[in-house]
Image (tube, rainbow, N blue to C red; front, side, top):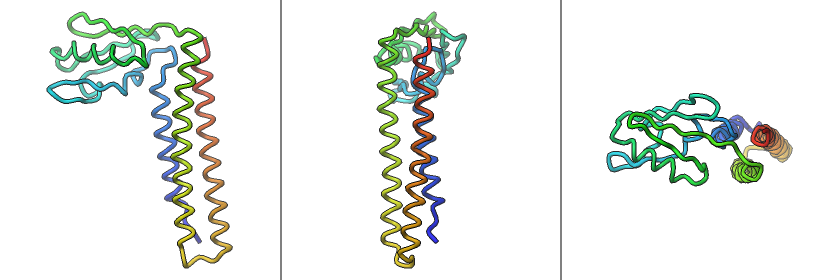
Length: 181
């Protein structure tokens, strides 16, 4: 019998990466993960913002970024401002950076959903790659009969469909959340 557990685990990993990417997508409410993709140049090297500062959501419309080293405040502020995809305008008071989250327009919401749909396609491509790798492994397995190979391919296809449906459901929930005013 062909073991599909490792393929299931790979698909779980793809789904988890997709969920992580969806957390970074802006929904109109302040969430620390919105700034997760920002890299800041500190001490001569680039590092993720969460390694240079503490990020908290003060309320639904404000993020507060507290640098671990106050001398990096300008670099952090510039890095947040430079990320055009977020469209945020941070302000500092010398100790912390306040990042107000503006209300989203209908047009901006649609752009965000469109951007998120590209992430859906990337996840599905990764899922199909896992399926193709599994199919290749099935084809080259010499100790399996044709019936077992056919059954294993069917199992892999069902697994791919199951995880593809999960990705679609996650995206639908996220797009509903984005479009909700």
